[in-house]
Length: 109
Length: 118
Image (tube, rainbow over all chains, first blue to last red; front, top):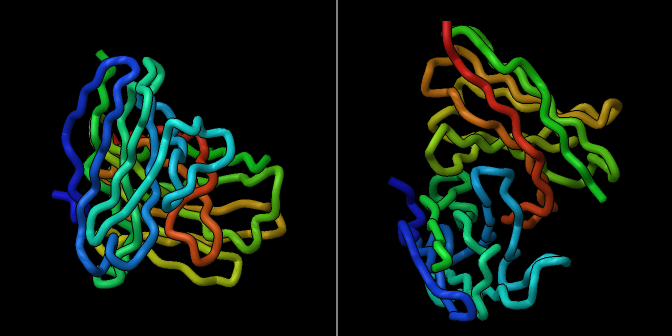
């Protein structure tokens, strides 16, 4: 059981807006920036959000936010190529460890 | 463009030591923190630990006594040693880099599968 909680699965249709969430506590999400990683078909993870800023090259339909102990990744205008597993991650000062969420499987219908 | 390439044996016997190398190209190995992250078949990502050219290291509390991570700036390589492996250590092992003070990764390697079996 991960200390960062993500939805097991989320689905949406092409063009729809979907939001993935990542919930933690004050020693992790409440204190540090969150990274979001996209993994397509068990390939190498790709960083799609660094805190609330997307890295260069990531489509601008991806956006990030954080409120309290919950971070969110929003995809506005879902595309078929967005179908993937998405993981959130951040540091935890109490555990002195980097944590990953359990991952969300995003299905594009 | 920084590229990371993991390498090492694909098969390790139980109780032996898993040894992997991450070669960093296209950028300096210094200033970045280099992590090892693993993913057992069909499961999620797990942080193994990180190393820095200053000698600073840290590792997952669940693995700490078995993990050694080092950075060789002369070879632009990051190494991982995991002692006393069991079948539970079977996973794809990724190398990833983040800037100092950052809590997210800028660079990822392609990963290498390590199976633990006799």
